[in-house]
Image (cartoon, rainbow over all chains, first blue to last red; front, side, top):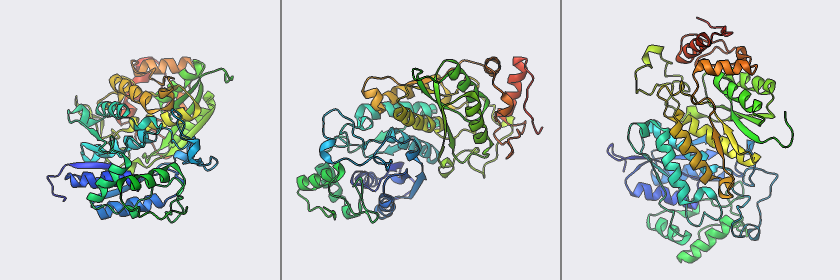
Length: 232
Length: 232
């Protein structure tokens, strides 16, 4: 898969279902993939272990983990241990941005991906935002991605020299069920992925949080047996 | 200076001449300033010590240092110990982006500032980019800042809720001499600032790199005695 002629891509991977599917899709499309994860003070590290294993098993060239203490700026239940991850019914009100939103997370992650892409001379960055993820997160909307790409092309040597950088969001219009069906077709082993907002240190999903609920529903709607071990 | 009615601002500070002047200007304009620095694998830490001291002495409410290993993505003489900081004549060719450029640095720093601004409910971010700094760095151009601001207003809760975030660049059209004159008028003690790309662990400037040359010339053109101790 990795000849010298294949284009390079940086792929943001969290160890979760969506970004793992994105990685499988990018590799299937012939990209030499450099995967990037962040140790950003999230509640559990099992997703970083999953990101490393999945990067290797799917055939990424290199996986990098950047240490970044987002907990230092606070503001989210996902990085602040003093804020509880809410029960699902607390986050489903329309138009309300949930407390699990990490301020500017995609913006920060994409920015470091842009830096690495510049060093690698990669022209593509893949990120697993999708329609379902836009449950009130402003940085999962297509118009945000467009604005980000425009900015990135002003920010970089590549942009100045006329080589366009593209932010690829192959999942943006897909439902969770469609994502799962696509990943299964590409041979993704979803057992190894971690979606839960509050997984155990071993990566065991809680079965109750928003992310677990979306995942369960996705497998059900895709008509595929859910290989995940849930605590509840 | 810090009453409850003053607007909040996040100010990116490096401990250098430019960002210190920006901080003094923001405080002079009545902002409650929250200063942000990065321990990003730069060649010397003396600038972080300077940023802390200057934040305090100028009256910032809080100074935060975020650990972020930009050296892990490589590509710059400022973070990669295997690349030498060039002599001035090597970087002055028109249109060539110098090797001291750190890939996507301003984009990364601004993104974390956006995250903190969101947590603080601050609507202003100050950054010390200026006309002189745009010696081939793509992320110091006014059109880049405009694109960044447009993106940031798509990315955030504030943007979605209609509160505009502004990236303030008060130095953008100023020469180094004008910046120094403004800072002197505001009582900035430039002895405490560190501009050098390769300062000694104690903060002693080399006197030879691009940044030292610009600084020397700035004081000369401003008609102000340069308080900096240079090695050469």
